[in-house]
Structure formats: structure tokens, C-alpha cells
Length: 96
Image (cartoon, rainbow, N blue to C red):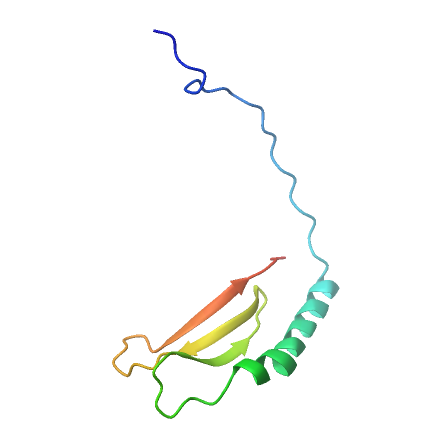
């Protein structure tokens, strides 16, 4: 009984991808400086509000940047019995 064309496996040459060039340190510092300025002047005033008096849902406590993620959010839970009352949520970006 012959095998169908779909079930046959074929070896294909796949060379290794070339590593991307490293990001210059001056560019990293400039991007980090602009990201911190964006967070402090735009994102924090708009999204970080004082905690509600009677919280029913999670709320944003802080927004910050680090060398890996463009923005990270620290959120606090509204439930007092929650075993982990806070969480850090990061949005990944280009790594260098």
C-alpha cells in the first residue's frame, strides 16, 4: 500500500539565522530616558489614580520601566483575603 504525499517527510536544508547586531549603548540610554519621561509625564498622570475607598476590582498602583520591558504595571487586588494582593504585569519589547 503506497503512502500518500502528505505523510512523507522531506529533509530540507535550513541554515542557522545570523544573530542581529548588538544595540549601541548610547541608543539604549536614549530610549530608556525617553521611555521614563513618557511614563512620568503621560502614563502615570492618566492611569495611576488614588485607590478607591471601597474597591471592588483590582486597580493600578504604579507604572514603571526597566531595561527589558517598555512599561510594567503594578496592580493591587481589592480582595483582602487574596493570598497575593499585588501583581506585576509587563509588556515585553525589543531586547538588546
